[in-house]
Length: 271
View 1 (tube, rainbow, N blue to C red):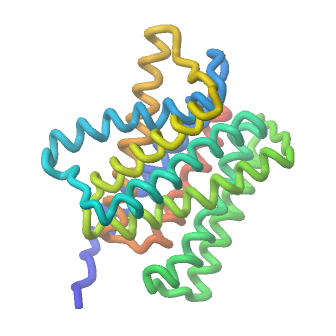
View 2 (view 1 turned 135 degrees about the vertical axis):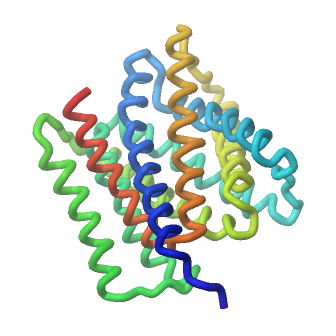
């Protein structure tokens, strides 16, 4: 039986979760900036993970040059399933942001903690106590009160936007559990890299089949913004979360990331 983590390790893990949520809070403003450049959400959905893949690859080459080997038996669960989750999430997030805005998307996204807490009972044997269920529901309620109660935040809900947002929440929570499942055996970088590659490839294939061109940034500033977007939200933030879940249970980590909603509400007031 493994020893419980030290209080210091738990504190560091929670700090990583909070920082990950804070970085993810910038996703909405970044997306809106690209929409205003004339780049549609479908293109942003591909460009974001593609940019992140570059930075994750650089991190792997720096930290663990031989750490990208993926046995054939893991192609389907890591590259295939992980890529599917990443690809669907990226598309759902951008489509929801375009249709109902950043605030409503974040509110719907954070149905995820309740999803993770429920599923983690069966996947990881995590305790499903009344206190934990209550905390998950309280975190969701807090997100909704923060988002919809913030001054200066306009929310215009549509059926399509709500459905896209709910899909965001499900895939976001599934992505967290994906990291929790594969992190202990593969480390944080390898599953992060291959799932991001798989998601980018899946979206690219879907767009190629549809015959739809990807709209690229047309200025150096746009490309620079894309690089920052990819690094912060596709490389740094998920790496922090995956590392934290080596110490924390998936349910606790998912609840901790709800800090994203509060930071997003602040950004909505400032920007």
